Length: 326
Length: 301
Image 1 (cartoon, each protein chain N blue to C red):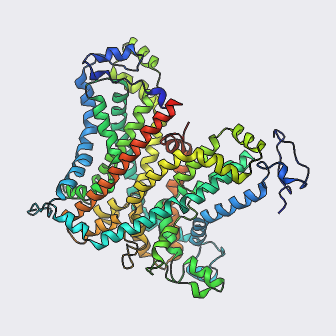
Image 2: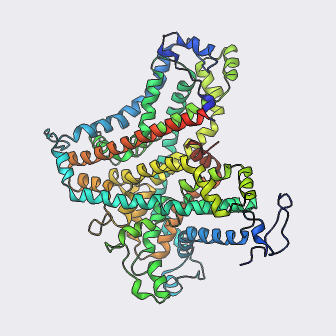
Image 3: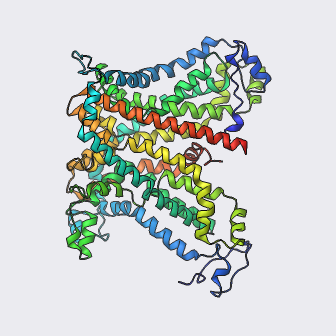
C-alpha cells in the first residue's frame, strides 16, 4: 500500500530547481514555485513545539548525566561519576534482572495465548462467529490500562481478593497468600495481569496475518494429508516469522518502558522484587533528588532503546529488500 | 467428544458434508470439531473478560451484599454507588476530556499543516526535516521525563493545564505528521492540479481539498490521542499535585486509596472511568484496527 506512494522523489538534493524534475518523474508535487519561506513558516510551529518539548529534553538529559545536577543550584561537572554509580547500583542491576523475566514472559506466554486464540479463531468456519469471537477477545483493549491494573490488584487482595477467595472456596486455604506482598510471588503476580493476554498487539498481528494466508495454501496442505498441528508448524509459523521478528523488537522496546503496573500494584517492592528501571529512575529523581544520576539512568535506557531501534531498522530494511526482490 | 454432533455446515463448502462420525480423519483440517473450537474460545473470552464482569457486578452491590454474596449478583442493584463514585471521579473526568480535546486540536493543527507540506511540496531540506521528525519515534518518552519535568518547573508550569497538554501534543504530533504525510501522498494529484488551474493557492488547496479528504486520518489521530491521554500515568502523576487537575489514570489511583473498603463505589468508579474509552472503541474500532495494522509492515495489506 505504501510502496505505491514511494515516488516522492528527492531531487532537491541535486539542484534548487529540482522540483521540476520531480514533476517530470510523475511525482506528486503541488506548489512548484511557491515561495519556500511560506513552507518553512508553515513547518515552524511544529518544529518549535518539538524543539522545546522533544529535542531539548532529550539532549538536556544526556548532557546532565555528566553533572551533579541540582536544578536551581550550582551543578558541578562530574564526568563519568554518575555512570560509575550506575554500574555499582545493585538495585539498578536488580531492576534489569526483573526486566529479563518480564521480557521472557512477554515473548513466550504472552504470545502463546494470543497465537492459540488466533489459530482457533481462523479455524472457525462461520464468519459471524469469527467476528463475534474476535470482538470479544479484543474487548479488554477498550478498558483503560489503569482500570485493568487496579482491578487485578484487587484480585490479589489478601483478604477480599478474588484469588484467595476462590482458593478458600475450593478448600485450598493453605495456598492463599499475600500475592503481591511476598517477594517470591510478586513478580509472577504482576505478570499475570491481563491473563490470557489476548487483547494485545500480537493477537491482532497474528490474526490478520493468518487471515491473509490464501485458502488455497491450506487446501493444498489438506490434500497432502497434513494434520492441523502439522500445518501450524509447516505453514502458519513460517509465514509469521517476519511479523514475529518485528513484534520481538517492539516487545523489547516496550518492556524497557515497563513500570506503570508495577508502580500501582507493588510500587517496586517487596524488597525490590518487582523493581524495574523506570521506577528506579523516578525514585532516584523524586525521592532521592539525585537529578544528575536519574538522567544518567534515563540516558542508559535511551541508548539501549536506540541500539535496539537501530537493529529493527536494519532488519526492516533488509526485509523490504527481500520483499522487493521476490 | 464427537466432532460431528452439531456442526453447522455451509453449502458452499468444497468438501462434501460428512454424514456422521464415521471417518473424522477423512476431512483433516475442516472438521477438527467446531464445537471444541467454540468451547475453547469461550473459555478464553470468559477468562479475559472476567475481571471486568466482576467489576461491573460488584459495582452494583452494597458492602453487605459484597460480603454476603461475593460471587453472585444480588438484588436490589445499588445504582447509588455510581452517584457516589461520580462525585469523586468527576474532576478527573473533566480534566481528561479537556486535555484530550485540547491535545487533539493542537496535534491536528500542527500535523495537518506539516503533513501537507511534507507530502505535496518540495523544498530544500525536506527529507532531512522529515527524518528529524521520524527519528523522534525512537526516543522513548520515559527517557526525557526528568529533563522535561525540570523544564516545566523552570517555566513555572507545574500544576497547570498546559503542562498536561503541551507534552501530549509534542508526543502525538510525531506519529500524526507521519500518518498525515503518508495519507496526503495518496490523494490523486489531479485534484490539486484542477484546483490550481482554477486559481487556488496553497492555502486554498489545504483547506478545501486536503482537510476534507483527510478526515479518516484525522479520526485515527484523534483516537490515538484519546487512548494516550487515558493511558499516560507517570507524567500527570509527577507534574500535578492539585487534585482537580488530575487525569483519569492518576485520579483513579487516588480514588482507590480513598475507597479502600468501599467496594461498590470503588468498582463503580472504575466502570465510569472506562466508559469514554469503551465508547470510543465501540464507534471507532475500525479506525483503530486499521491504524494498528497499517502501522506494521506486512500486517496490513
